[in-house]
Image (tube, rainbow, N blue to C red):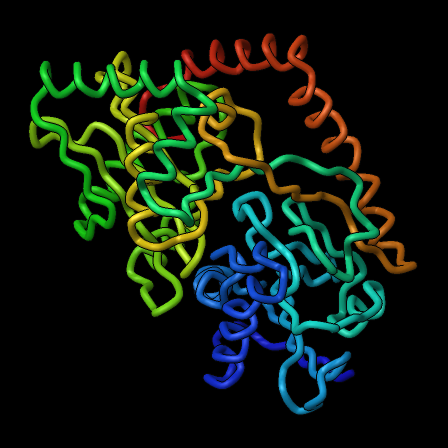
Length: 371
């Protein structure tokens, strides 16, 4: 097994096509989770354009009959001290290795080939990953199945969440009457609407006491690049719901040829009583079904609206793969307590409720400008 490590921009056209082909074939091989757009080469290439620490391990052999062809791709970020992170850690909703059927390798051995002492992940995809045995926690990632078309989507939603569906559609009709005709654009190409979405999302982060991701220039640039990235199998997709010609809710996410992965949803608080964010999600799922996608992946995290919309749940994992190395020990000692505390708070309602209210209260004291 030979491993070459390069910057994403240094991948050959043949290697990128091989990566895309492995993804495209995954569903037919019983690994539909690998079709997630966060695992596509386009996402890693975009991250590499805004972060110089991004690398890709191209593995040849390891079970492939043609030892010269790529058998697996592992994107990651690497510090100068050998600390590795899943590409986009803390931002990406699906991580792992994209590999050919029958591929196998040793996790620590792969780290050695990549020059890493440790590799950290928080959304590792399920399946035959070389890092599966190193997970320290498993978490639900709700999914809406849309493969059978729009009518089947609506029928299934009404069957499992009748009250939610009725209330939300009723609010949509009221919004149409009071604010003007509703128009949904599934793939909005006006970049001004992306800026509107960022403004709403930044305000939401501040309002709820969370750190503003769009205060980081590299994330702003990454989203801009992904918005303009379009191939046969990948696109950065902006969806907008308008009422009376005015945008009331928007979402920016990533789409492969099978999966729409939700990422940055937000809405205008002036229309909050109409639940425009929920209306947007319904339209997104319906349009994705009409588009021929298989699913909408709503990402890790417990939310009431996800419970109402979901058809099922995937499982993603967090943890570390380590070698016997002092850097790995130090990294784990630093990160493990923080993760354990966060997961304990999020998973226990009696802790999450007060913590969430405290963050919102602190957010109310923040200045209205960007962080």
